Image (cartoon, rainbow, N blue to C red; front, top):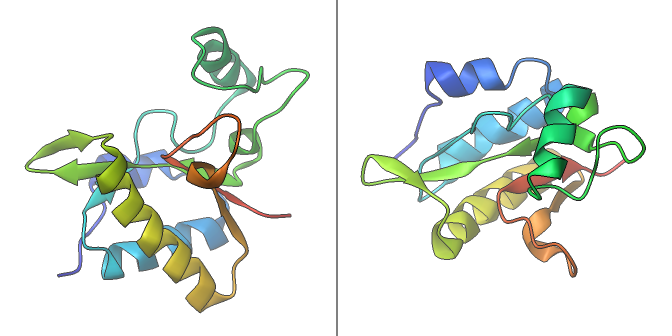
Length: 129
């Protein structure tokens, strides 16, 4: 079953690197778990990134330590299960499997925040530059 991004998730991908958007769309074709893009899950301004840092939701302050979201080279996702957003580790791992498979299939180098050692960020994917 292929899933489709909602209008809201499509809006949240504006400004994201077109290569990464293609990976997201391909992952939706092959995933076992539907997913979408949360608020501030795509391109972020300096102020938005700094607010997330101050809320301890990011290690990047957006000023001195810039996030890849600020350049459009990262995206965050949430799983969509039983009609609502899920941040469950198992659900996000299914999404990650599809994202990484799509990237591999397309020859795109992609890093998943679920593989990080210090700050595990399960919803996060970024292009490797």
